Image: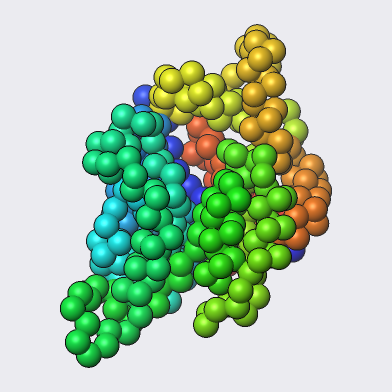
Amino acid sequence: MVPLSILDLAPITRGSDAGVALRRSLDLAQHAERWSYGRFWLAEHHNMPGVASAATAVALGVVAQGTERIRIGAGGIMLPNHAPLVIAEQFGTLAALYPGRIDLGLGRAPGTDQVTMRALRRHQQASDAFPENVVELMRYFEPAVEGQAIRAVPGAGSRVPVWLLGSSLYSAQLAAALGLPFAFAAHFAPDLLHEALEIYRAQFRSSADYEKPYAMACINVYAAETDAEARRLLTSLEQAFVALRTGRPTELPPPLDAEARRAFEPALNDMLAQLLRYAVVGGPETVRQGVSDFVQATGVDELMTTAMIFDHAARLRSFEILASVCGLPHG
């Protein structure tokens, strides 16, 4: 089995708040470390009532402080929302405090709606300069040279590993051109998964840090004691997707029973089936087979998994089952 990692959105459940969500993220990361997951990443989203990781670098600092070995990173930072120097300083600070444990995944999307995007970026053309901004940011992580006018302090010389994230062919091509590792967001935008991986591998140019391509994909994995219980847990995410797609984002709702779930309109079921085509949902054996099939079909070098589960104990149990069926040693 390839290495396993976790993407967390610090879900704010209905009736809860951001403080509880972030403390639960820390708890999940501590368990993930004991279960031998390789990475724990948080994602930047804005103006979403159900996501507490907007200040991603701040939240990562809390998680890193509460863990010892697991790699901590952004999956990702939406770079057009920020000045590259600021991100270099933030992640340079994390690298100074937790050397050898920090990753920086970069995305080109806003991580929010169009109105909030304008509030964040101030101008709509920010994403056009994404390639140049990635290169600028990477330079700040290199050792400073004599006469360099602008330095990231902390950051210079930290060589924080940079990943490119994406759900389209654009970032796959850019990651290949720059010789960077690439992560595809199949957990919410699965359409171009195989084509993006194929382009990334075919066009990859060796770099100082990577002689060959390194591809990761993120999928939803919902594990429970039975297939039926796992499908019930998934209904929280399904409701969240429906709310987001209809312009009514909300806190993560509790799961639905089977009868309430059957009441979904056919059009919604079609949308969810498309979005969740790579989701692995079921009891231990179903999850083991589903994960194995996905890895074999894609040839990914690493698998990142995510699960927006309402009940925190059930979320912990889901990731514990996944670690067990995939053979991760428990620490």
